[in-house]
Image (cartoon, rainbow, N blue to C red; front, side, top):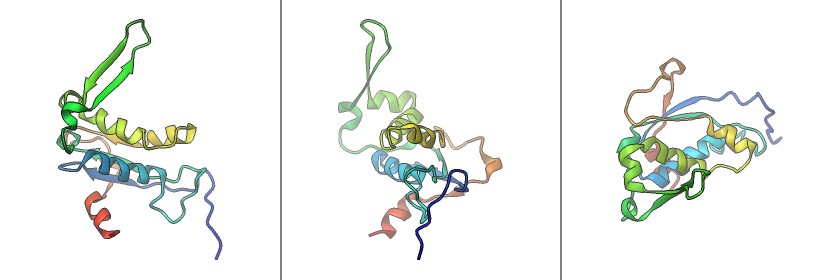
Length: 150
């Protein structure tokens, strides 16, 4: 049997809809990163973007375990002198929950041009509404996929 090596443009990506309600942040981000990379498909090719588009809804209802809301901080630098900023995970979840999921998934993708192109296929929304109805996204149950592998 031959190994399938997909060329650029042959991937035929699908659109998947993920509901983040009561999902643990890290576990959800790991599953979404695997789908964006295309590792859930038998035609996975490491040097080609074979992943699917992922639409995550209800990002405001994401869950974190332990005391991460208070203890975990996100730091960034504005580029100006004295411009180092810091915000706790709890503050970020209250103000921009979509950004929390985007940061978690981005850090799990490859750090290259290919990883940046994979990240553009992630769409995250805080509520239930999204503008991708025309693509007819299929419902992707993250919880069922993790229990089926055990």
